[in-house]
View 1 (cartoon, rainbow, N blue to C red):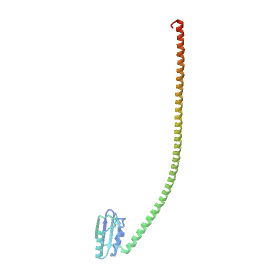
View 2 (cartoon, one colour):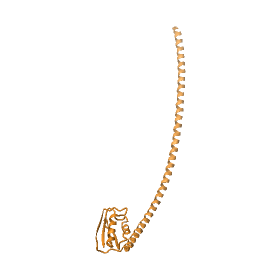
View 3 (cartoon, helix red, strand yellow):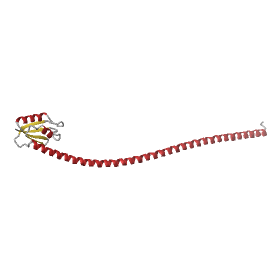
Length: 201
């Protein structure tokens, strides 16, 4: 007895479905599984009980990552590859995939090494920039300290100048007062003499 099973769904390919089904095909004489379009098409051959049992398994079980929406079972009268032959063919396919992935991984690793080398160069440049920035900050802080010292010195000098100016003003006031006092005394004496001479005393 032969049958054709079409498995449909969002994710029925590249989830290990063919290996999964092959592991359940031990009571069959013939087995083939192919990715056609977005579906998985399985051809089986065996005695009636074996075919029915396998069909029930396909309807009830699936690989963990598979997303199945429909399983269609129909009659089939074409050729079906033997289970052993298909196992060998699938093994070869899997080896080719592994080799392809290995080559891609090697290329990715090579590219990653290049990226890491580039990153190391960037990190080295960044370290250099940070070192330069630290030096600039140190210079700026030094200039800031010098400027603050100059401001303090200038402030002290201005205070000293203000103090000296105030003292000069006080001394001038004192001198002016003494001068004015002497002038008033002289004027009073002169007025007194004039009064005496004109007989007003």
